[in-house]
Image (cartoon, helix red, strand yellow):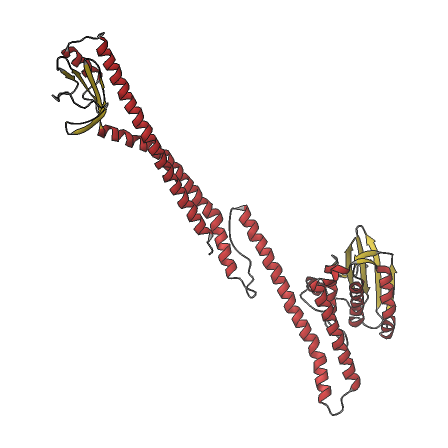
Length: 434
């Protein structure tokens, strides 16, 4: 079972309301009990004081005078008035601040509950040797006081709960709503629709999440674009040799040399694709060791010297002793492909310059030629990895892609530039970390 963030927000709002109601209810129950106890204690105290005063004889007043005192102290016209009765057991006389003729009660219980003047009265009585004192309060007055207490308790709690709900609503609007919109937009994304997310939010964390997802989408889009371009490159590379093989095999007298040439071309292409697959899987990283780039460059130049000579090209090397951490086989493939690219795409009479040097904390390998070069727009496209080099004769367009992947595996960067000395030609630089 899964819940949306908006559902969790509503649950949080509901829990806030229920918690506020439970808090008010619990507080009211406790306050009601304590308030009632306080009022009962007050009645008991007043009845005890009045009873002790009358029993002590210090205020031996006639009934008329005592009635006036009770009327003054306990105003009958006051809405919160108390009902006070004083019975003289010796004479049977009754003095009260309210006009009635109820007889002396037979009940000896200290707690009282009487009906008078269409109201229910609750209170207490204190019995002495001569006098019986009763003090009662109307039940509806007590109810009104309890309602006032409840209002005083509930109002600040409900106001605070309202403020909390408003803040929670603002939180939902600022955080959960943008996150929900992000979720809905992500559900619509696919490999065919990798459009950046467009969600406005004032919340820093949500903005960071949106920007991070957009960067991931852009990276995935770039990878898919490169993979599609790679598939196009492979199709282009396979089409020419396969077409040649098909035509030759369909003829009455196939050209054995042409068949052998195309088979070798396909073999080299498959070998390059396997190398690229191994690089993509990252298996080569486990075999990294210190590699002498100067010796590797000398070895590759010697192996390609006959091919360069046959093409009417000259190789010049400017090498300094440099060592990097990497895989020797992959680095050899990298250097060989750079040299083959120059060999296959340049004209006879081209001079290829291989340079190996250190610059600050980087080791730089450069392969330059004085051929026709590549215009700046094409170089930018090649550096972005979306375009291929045109193949000619036995060359193929996967070499540069493989070189770039090998450089990435080694933490290096590969860049195509115009020659820095101002001469015509192309400069390919690979910069290794040390």
